[in-house]
Image 1 (cartoon, rainbow, N blue to C red):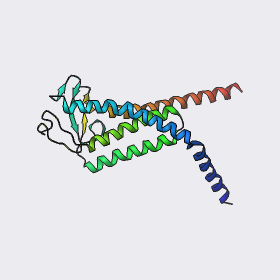
Image 2: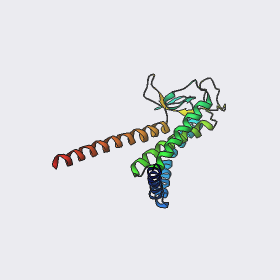
Image 3: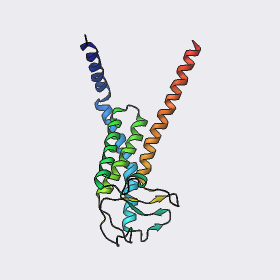
Image 4: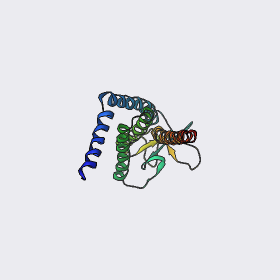
Length: 197
């Protein structure tokens, strides 16, 4: 008797995978990941290269260049590199997993942008950097390991962040806002349908 519900549940899972992981759907999701990669990696790489090889001082126009040993918005600054890599990698894997289990293009795009932002920060941290000026006690042209380059600030003592941090926020907050709006819309539509009958 207990096997029947389990068989129904198993069949639902199989049906879900058959309908959502077709070649066309997988190709569609990979296409949005490539679009997100272009959106995130192009400006991030250009700015990182400029900051390292052209900027001659720490504060240039809208840029205030710092090295960040922590995660987004300078959190976990004094943590071990292992913990920071672990947290960033887990976040990337979770978002990547969610991308492949969502069906709507807007969630796929937004979460792919967040995924690429997180992935770029992991790659940035794994790539040694050097600058043409002294930064955080490191002399010019010294290779610095296990840091992310941050360069935007709102001024004062606010957090300093980079393009990938912005794309993570856009992806996650955008997905939450869309979900919230669609939930309210669905609730209102259902309520109007009930009151009309």
